[in-house]
Length: 352
Image 1 (cartoon, rainbow, N blue to C red):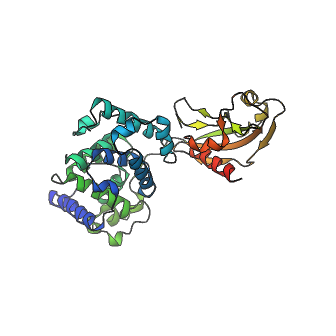
Image 2 (cartoon, rainbow, N blue to C red):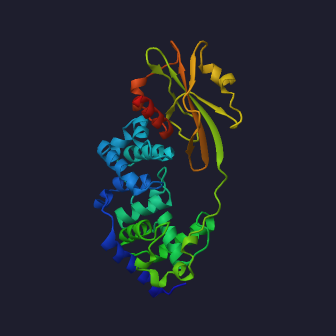
Image 3 (tube, rainbow, N blue to C red):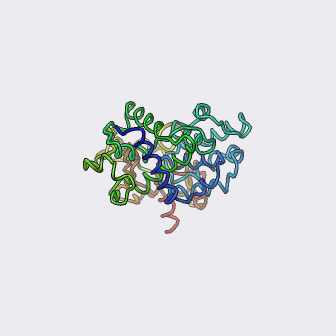
């Protein structure tokens, strides 16, 4: 392990690099904890290039935490559509209500108090505490894991309890106490821009002379993650029911799991790819009246990949004269918060 002086050189080098190379991002132009919180929640599983547009849209629609708290959940989910991990959006909304109603719109200023907010974990609490309130709390995200694992040659898996503890302690020891917010943003930007996951340009790296991974030629091997849980395959059949007066059926997903709170067409889920006799399935018959015109829209399944699930999806068009449960005008479909899988389908049928 490097000496204290070498550790401080690491920190100094990162900050110097950041001051010359940092990305100009709108949430960096403020220390408003509401905007910093909003950006950090959005960027947890999202690249900056994608999250920026969502941040600007949320900031315009909900300029204060009170505005977000008073919004309808359907609107919040609709505006979040495309970012994925919809539990983050629901937690965002609940936390806004908590801050608005219970804390008079004021964010807690300490790491420990921030952790009490719904959906706020170690990373987000550390980011807000350091950036907004100058508290000495080190952030540890994917970028930080990568930089530290490579520079120090750490092979402990980052997604284990031991790994998280080891990296957090190391990150804390490297923190620039007098400017924790700057340091935290520096190491995150360094991981995103310089020490990239694939093919980093080590010849241009200011830390190359003392990087263990570079010296040992194991840059591509670090950081290490334990194998993820097995991917589950699911087989979805959505029923796009169309009446003569151009109405269809949308249902809101109430059950916990993927897409809770979002809208979808009636869904029939089969147990396997070999079980494709859907027209005789009881759940199919429940939705489809006799003398309906049935058409399979896509013969090959649309494969939608989530973190631990792959969805093999077919869409069926069911043309009927009337349907008692037809509750949405087809030309109003784009106003509902739906999964991207269904949003893409709606966009396709609108273009027909």
